[in-house]
Length: 279
Image 1 (cartoon, rainbow, N blue to C red):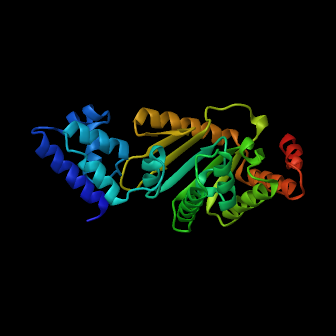
Image 2: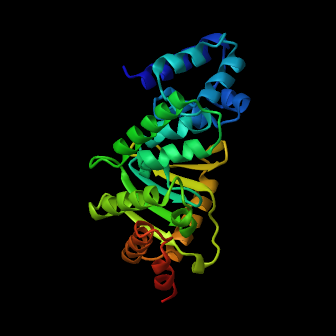
Image 3: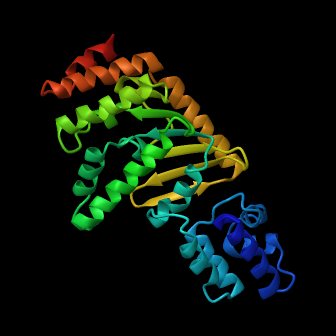
């Protein structure tokens, strides 16, 4: 029995034993999710987020049993607001992600990730930064591996222009993404400044699975939200498709990224790409 299956069986047992006649629908109402979502947890289709485990513990008065089980199962090692998304990401069949401010985590080089953590302020110690970088790098290695999910990324031009760490770090970061494209490991498109506005901002990630309904994850500074409402998923998919249609083609995007990388490598800011975007 996997940790997910054990958690699901324990959730069902606690629901049925701690509060007689507590249905999945009733428990869902108490913890602000659908009864179907509770059912998916019990059937080991979904990985439980830690905050939901805490809410269920409170609703069933379990004395913190599910929160302790969540920790013992080792579901995740990421920040609470991203934890449940990371767990689902590891099981995804396809991942379609938009990045409007930074290179998405699974594509980051160790140097880029470290520079991000350093620039974020002094809330992490050197040891924590080393651990965070190692965790992010390991996650990226698994997701971009040959047997990983199908990947499609859309990046705003600002992501490529914003210098994180140094121009050398940026050049290496762009070359890393170029290599993933050349290995046909992902599709990558760029929305140039001249394309104007579209509906996406920040970070939006769409995931599909072979054993569960699709999910979307949206993130802003120090906060993230996992979305499974069908109507909201339709809106996210529509906005992603509009951004994809607005972006440069995959071939033009690769040439665009190469041009910016060359600019960084020669000590500039990729000005050659500016003229290409105007053609």
